Length: 286
Image 1 (cartoon, one colour):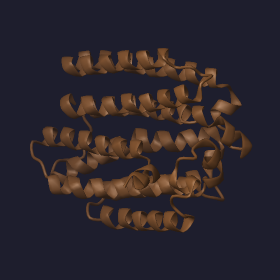
Image 2: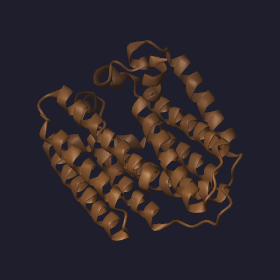
Image 3: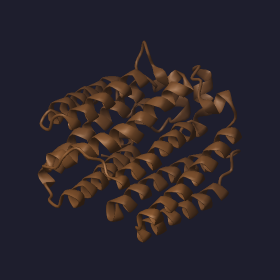
């Protein structure tokens, strides 16, 4: 089980699960009814797509991961490439078949995510080689597709019209910026392998200090704006929750040592922790 979670990249599984839960709870509150069976099938479809995307990325990055992430199952030899191919194939098929149960927004969400995840990793396109297009894929999926299309899916599946309220737009804005931050920060710990295999990440095009400083400022400004928007919307506890996340990020940033790979990895993981926190705040008060 631990090996499979490493293959699936547990932090992305948590992020996907929290995003679906938050968007479902928001839609259920807005509509006034719930349908947990529909939520469960939607979660299954999206998690299967998640494993397909993360697994495909590892299948195409085995040699790079032997340098950057030797603990991953394919790089370490815990899974053979054939095992990885079977998992990716089954999860891709499961994602496609299960999403068709709730047209049109769930298929739009899953199929567009699968498409972008495929061209991100696979030859001949392999957009991850170019920092702009790599960031584009992450931003579009995490920032726009997941939040807007999944909310519309939950809302219409619960019997309401296709409408996006201001709280969902605020969440989309925050996660859109988080997509940029994650796209930048994810390469901070991986410079050695990326450089050797010609992956033009922003960290290599610029410097780790440049990426960190711009990303940290952008994230802090975004959370400050979000606190102000929550106050303007009259949701005090949402503003408090987002303010706590801002303080937490400042704490993690002060502990970062860009000359220590373990410190960089911890900082990147803490950024995902703040990402999780945003969805928890909106799950409760959104």
